[in-house]
Length: 421
Image 1 (cartoon, rainbow, N blue to C red):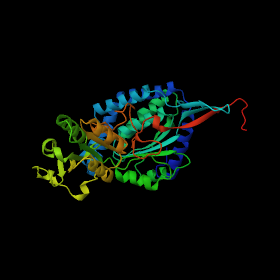
Image 2 (image 1 turned 135 degrees about the vertical axis):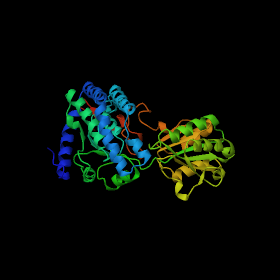
Image 3 (image 1 turned 180 degrees about the horizontal axis):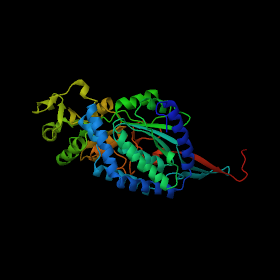
Image 4 (image 1 turned 60 degrees about the horizontal axis):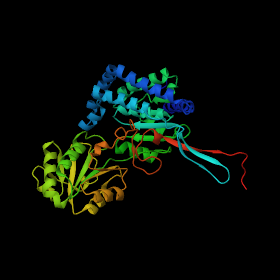
């Protein structure tokens, strides 16, 4: 029985076992990793009643804590979302194994033959908040890339994460892979998070997935390298040449499909030439859908809107609220995004290919879309099967972090008695 009171000893033990499992997993055959993921998918589906029962406990805990509707939506599982987890596990299982992939290969005049090949990172620590499906996504992607993973789920999703984790371990056991390859921190004690951030001898990278408070804490205190994004301050720019039907479809989906995810639209920038036509139409549609629109002086003339305050620009609402303002041109829109955005995801809606090309080339967000909902900012929608998160930094991984992004590389250099002159 683990001593849950002695957090440093608990985490040291978990880290040591993860490091040993990572050494085995790094050279595990692709067939066994695939079998473990398929087995985990089957276990999730067969145990869905147990997972839903565990989720009910978490929902009750969330209600007692007074979580917002958006946060409760993140936490909630139903049979459809469990099916989504199963589909994600199977999708990752079917992907090509990134480990050992030859990224480049060449010969040198010296007689050396050089290959750069993908290798696992080692042990990955994932710290996340209320979304229990991250347990399956992170476990699957780390396993596929030959990494061991230490999962520290949020206190809200404690029971759901445990139930899903048991399914991942069942898959590992049945595939004859070390169950320590996917470990879940078995305590709600926040000291476990602080401990993970300093485990430089056993954890190779930390991935925080959650709100600004969590990610900011990790980035401030971690001694382990971090893949992270702080906010999903997502902008949609409606160009003068936008198609009104596409505007309605894209904006309503981007804001209202799921408000609590990092790809949800938070700010609308409308070219002043179409503010009275397309702009007015889309704002009325948002209001009719139950969205609170916080608008600049021009758009606040529309009945039902509220005047925006200064702090509404650059704000991640994660709720049925959106900021909206007019801009004189695309340059002003891009300047606003550079000032108030978070380099996460931004979108242009236009029928002008030159405007779209300039917007997509000039802005430096991790994901830039043209005439498509920002809710597509998701590794699963990018064909990665799932994602461990979205990174907005520029070192190593950027955008959705899938299995391939959870690898490093090494050089394999071959000679024939070759010496340097």
